[in-house]
Image (cartoon, rainbow, N blue to C red; front, side, top):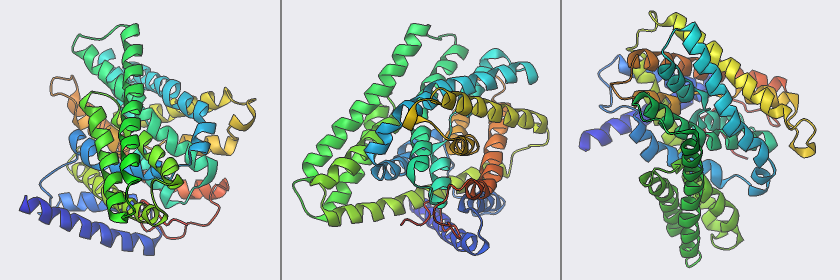
Length: 407
């Protein structure tokens, strides 16, 4: 335990230094962390632990999701809910199908492996998306739409990933079972979030101590996630629901004004710490991967992922072309397409693949390659794209960290 704390402190020190350097060089903070992680892996400073699905889901995702949801206005989320759900369900399924078919015929992978990879890599990652858009101060409808979609589509990806794993094991459920599992996962997660968030509001309304209020929100963030995961429901949707509930109902009296300011500051820092450790840990395994032998497969996978994302975004948006306020402008569609970053979620799911999965090492290496492309290439070009399309109201300036500066 002592070594764990010491090594975590070293990682946070490195993250702080990277933040300062990134600010001076006007580089995306996440890319600096990725490079630092690769450098750490080549030295004796390795922390002794790695990014796993369990670590991501139990320690890192709850604070990131709660911090984003707490600041989301429910009115805006509700307005665009049809668009968000379309992209997060049909869009993910379509993108997964494109990648799976392409992997089968272009890479000659077995169908079960191609489908598993398609599901694993097609959902946009809330960690990467939120980090990028926070750093660029993207507000308004676009910021809400992109962040909400990245959070909601995790439920779809989680269910499809489970189905694909079951298929490889010979126990794939029938279509009715798939739909039932999806509905249970989604609505069960939402109910967990409502239950934990509602209980937290009742307790918070009985105190005006901002430290106690912060404690209650911490319990809500992690408690809702862990409760949902315990019953094999969507922890992301549970924490998202709890965050939306506390962020929108709390200011009506359950959480004091001073408490809200303290809560926002606390979760902004928690998000900074989680993001810093995630991207450092993503960079470390990249240093020891042989990308040369799988270079062509990585190139094909990147192309397939981009095609799948394009069909999902432009096709899904076309359904709302004549829907008045639900219409997504061409500029916003371009940003949704290029801003569909892959990151920690795909990374962790790839590492969580059982050893018995065929071509496991190939899948993980190709996944790492796609994630690296997404973080570096798409991450570096997001700010110029946002500026060109007029999506940044206030120039972001040097990027201090994944959470950026808040106004």
